[in-house]
Image (cartoon, rainbow over all chains, first blue to last red; front, side, top):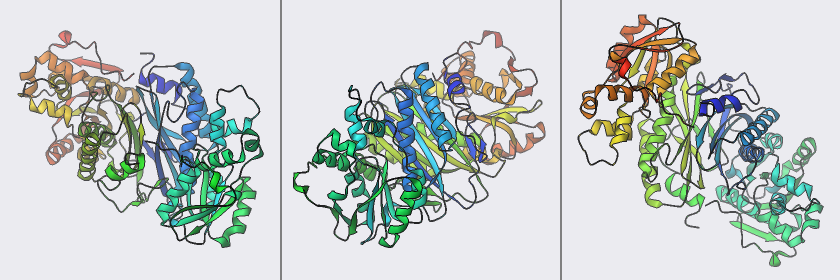
Length: 317
Length: 317
């Protein structure tokens, strides 16, 4: 009985992470019971990460916890939602206490860092995968949709997209020069604080999980508009330029996934407020183009013709 | 591109099932947005079903949809919650349109039958599994917990536990005599209406997914009490007695899983109301024993000594 589902849940998941008064009943019953604060809407997202596809097969428990948690919270950030609660359903081929210990410790740490309690989940035997369902709160009508971009809006991106893609290429190499690139892949930061600040500024937003080009395209499609993007303004860090050529860095910035940065649109009259938000949150925000009527993405600037954009964003399926 | 994640979601999952006004924003954005009705608490449960463990490998899409949906809604029934919304995260090894079509049609049918909209999910490639996160509503304080059983309460069970276990044994056999047993396994009924009726009657409840003995034990442990169960009162259908001996039928009733019946406790003063509820919902409810101070389950009645109870409920892990 030492390794049955219930004893594992009790050992690794029963009393971890952030505790909150709005949890009427936590894990251990048929359901958790939540008292959603009055005057809020609930934002909800479910994501599955599969071993060998969304994280390297054999990845340690803390790496898997961090990647799944970040992907989930990034969806809240893209809606401008404040983290509320989450569940985790873990499938693993055998009980591995070292792995479980690293997983639950990291999950607990992140739960506390983002003040979001774990309220339930499941543990099953099978090929390794992890499904996180995350919930966040916004005031009615304030959730930032993908569909709100208007012609004339500015298009922004946070951070340095493409760094996670470079970090993935560096995995397993002995080269220790590019710490920030590796970190971008291994410890991406969901842009929660920034997303909260964007609730009253952004007209549309999406998180960059599949690549800037692909995710921007999703937002444009939802909004039934197009965009002109100045590739000279795509933010490329000095570390990226040490790691690779400018063309390759741009390709990574446009097509590599896993950054969990935000791409968003805002009315030009909000430029000053967006700059203030960048300062107050300490997040780099770069204006990379504008919304136009003509559908699709038009890349402008020197060197567009030489860009290798065949791989226009990662295809899940 | 015909078989990428987005086109599959659009084809099979974008516009299916029950539609509800409380869904501010459905699938297709970074999050769904829900307007939880004021004056309710949210009950929440996550369950993963893995191919080859929780359903037979190679099972058709409609079978998988039904089993997963029922397991999820059964958790709501056990809390006395009214279905509110759900998400589904499907992992499958390759795109199988026949399977997906059967799966989405059945999911849509069940969503409409139980008036519970699908608000989001995920689709990933890997070994087949399905994670459903389900939400329901109860009035504050009315969710039925496992922990509320008191000494002197009656112990009840709904339906004929063990029939699903018998149905599983019949799978693939040519024998067509035992339709109700097969149906108990293939199309179990989540006891939603009954659960709603129990909100003000039951002191504790659990759904019977792992076997009556094991699930009753969970409820007793949560309530820090014990129970005396009269095996002469365990409901055994005439079809079960045709299928097997009384001893084997009892063993199945006590230890086989997948019935999704409810086991609950209620104060003896509520006996009449419980009988009325059975009549109004058309669900068979049987009083099988009572709650006692001494921990554990004491089986009473003729033939206890000959029961094979070595397998005291299915172990998940």
